Image 1 (cartoon, rainbow, N blue to C red):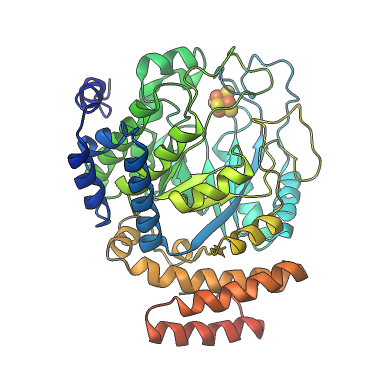
Image 2: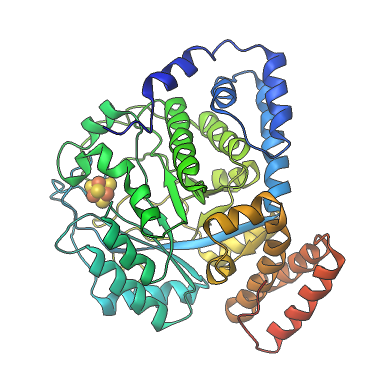
Length: 455
Ligand code: SF4
C-alpha cells in the first residue's frame, strides 16, 4: 500500500486547526502575498475561516496573487469526449457500466476529427481528450491514433489527455504522440470513501490510480494535472490530500502539478447515488479556489462548465486561470446533442464567442497560447521560469498575440470591438518596455498573416 496520503496526519492537521486565532490567520494571509506558497499546516488553518472579515482578506490576497502571477490572462480550452464506454462503476458518474439508460458510443477516427474541427471552428486551439475506461475500446492505441489524427487534421496546437491509469510503456506512447498535459483525478483522497465510490472495475484499485503520475513521469511525461471531485467527502480533507499528493511527486521528480482541477459533483443521469454525499456550497467552493491559489501560486486552476455562468465569472478573480467554454460532454456532442449520452450536465451554456466577450468585459485577456508546450518549456523548465516570475512576461504577450489571431479568424463585430480595446490595454500592462515593442512588432506580423511567432 502506497503512503503518499498520510490520512492520519491529515486528520490531525484538521483537528488542530479549527481554533486558530485571528492574529495567526492574518499572518498566514500576509505570508501568502509573497507568492511562495503555504505549508499544509497553514492551509489547514485557512480552511476553517468562517469569519466574514477574514474571508474577505483571504479573497483579497487570492486576487492579489492571481494578478501578480497570471496578470489578467484566462486560458481557454474545450473537452472532446471520444467515448462514453466504461467498465468501471463509479457511483457518481453517468458513464458507469451499470447505467443502462446511457446511449453508449465510441467515436471513429473520422468522427473524432469532425469533433475536433467543430471545436476549432469555435476558435479553440487547445483540446482535452476524455474517455471512459474500457480496455477494448479506449486503450492507448485509441488515444494515440486520436491525437495523431487531430494534430494532422487542422490547427489544434495542444492536446491534453484525461484518461485512466496506464503502464509506463503506454505513457511512452502518449508522449511520442505529442501529449500536452496528462490529467488524472484521484476523485477522493480518502481510501474508505474511494472504495465505496468505486466498487468494481480497474478503478477500484486506489493505489494503481494514485501511482499513475509516477509512471507518467517515468515515461518522460513531466506535465501533469491533478484534481478531486468535490462533494464525495469532506472538502477540507480533499484539499489537504490533494496538496499532499502534489508535494509527494514534487519531492520525487522536482515538478509539481501544472494544473489542479476543481470539479464539483453534480447529479448525472443514471448515477448510483441518491444524493451528493458531502455537498460543497458556494461559500465553501470560493474558499477552496482561493486557498489553492495561495497554497500553490504557480499551478493553474481549471474550472469546467459544471458551474453556473455568473459563478464562473466570479471565480476568475479568486484564482481560476483556465476554463473550458462552449463545451459538450458526450461523444459526438459538437455535431449533435444527445442528453442521454452526457457525463454530466453543463450549467454554463455560453458559446466561446460569448465567453470571450464576458472575459473582456471583466477586464481580462483571453489566451489561446500553447507556446510553452511547443517550445519545450514544460516540467522543471516551466517551473524555473514560473518561479522566477518570468512566465508572466512571456504569457501576457502570447495571450495578446493568440487573442489577436482568434479575433482575425473568428471574431464577430461585437467581439472584435471589445477585443481590440482589451488588446490595447493589455499591451500597456507589459511592464518591460523592450518586450512591449517586440510584441507590437509581432502583432503587425500576425496582421500580415504570419503565424507561429510566439515568445
Ligand atoms: S468516472 Fe470515469 S471510470 Fe468512472 S464510470 Fe465515469 S468514465 Fe468510467
